Image 1 (spheres, rainbow, N blue to C red):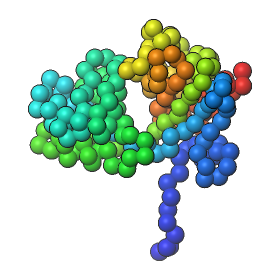
Image 2 (cartoon, rainbow, N blue to C red):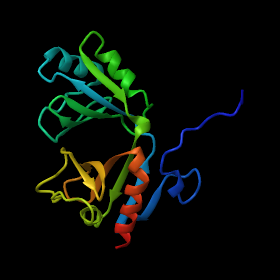
Image 3 (cartoon, rainbow, N blue to C red):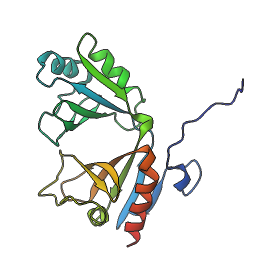
Length: 198
C-alpha cells in the first residue's frame, strides 16, 4: 500500500494558469472568472409542508428553507437554493468542511427525507465585473437583467449546451455564481473564457 496522500482535484485543474493555484482568469475591471474549489454541496428532498422538518433544519443548521420558487435562503451553516417544490441544493460556506450531507442527516434524524452529497459532482465558478452579464448572455437564454433576476434569487438554465444553476451575487448584474455538473465544468469554463474574449 502506498504511503502517498491522495489529494482531490477539481475538474478544472487543467485550466489553472499555475499548477496548484486556484483558477483565475480575466480582469476585475471587465470580467474576472474564478473557481471556488470543492465547495460542499448536498441535494435535499423533503416535505415542505412538514413543520417538524422545517423546525429541525432551523434548529440544526440555522436555515429556513426557501419555499418560493427560484429563491435562495442563507442560514447559519448552509445556503439553500430552490430547485423544485420539494427539492433544494444546499451549499456550504466557502472554506467549510465538505460534510454538509452528514450535517443535514444529523439535523433531520428521525424524519422522512433524502440527502445526497454533491460536492465532488459539481464545480462552482464565479464571474465578477461590469461585463459579467454580457458574458453570460452569450450562451444563456434567460433575461438576466437585475429587474428580472436579482439578489436572493436563483435560476436553472443552460449555458450553451450545459445545464447550470445561476445565482446573482449583487443587485446590479455584475456578479454571478454558476454551479455546473463536473462532467460539463471544463466545457462551460472554456465557453465562458471564449465569451470573455468576445
